[in-house]
Length: 354
Image (cartoon, rainbow, N blue to C red; front, side):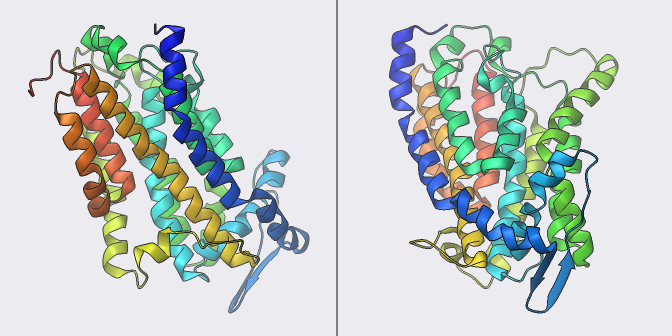
């Protein structure tokens, strides 16, 4: 366990994550989102030029969830219904990229040294992200991880098995993330009927809970039937499949979007008073907060592992190439690919690079 002096130094070093969280929260402006939702909540109708749909009432059996997300379904509607074309392209890529983020957070909770730290309960953070925006929440998660999680020096001194995440349920986790997140996102944006898109927007609101509970429940059921293995390599299939989904949507966006990446991803300067433009700005800031802090955490991790010899000189190459890889395959795919490389470095006794 790291000393208090080491934790103090890491706390100072983690300050950029908090700056990202504060910036993202200010840009998203949840009070303005709530104010913009009010007319939809009062009328129970989402209406736009060329279309109109009633907001489903009583979607969940628990009334508190119905109250929490009733107006939120309207906030997603400019993107999911496509009456703001910029938001459709941006939010589709963003939500697909959350699949790798959710997956890595759950996998990290299995790591030795994480037990009963804040990162041991990723579902709490992901559900908080549904309430507050994951953009402000994700940097806090990574800040806590860097401060209280296992240090590179501690992992270097540990047996190889204690460095890597337990991967016995990798197939189950992939299935759960696909069913309760990725497939629902595709239905939200690509279903031919607005009623269907609205249904899956409602269903997706509890995705963090479904992923957390579903993974725990199914893993417990299948655990007795899994072969006993001594393998400690990172889960290739899981990372590859999720990376391909993210890279595929990113490539589709690059090829077919009529808008530049700056238009899709960079929030407008200054406050946006209109419902559509503020929703767009909020989700753009959300995207930057989540994936920006995720990639920054990778940079910290590469430097950390390189400082104790687990990556050798490779840490410098990984950091230098990360922007290039992000531009080519998108931030979600770059994040899970970087995490996979990190796991590979942790799964060998000694890095062979010099």
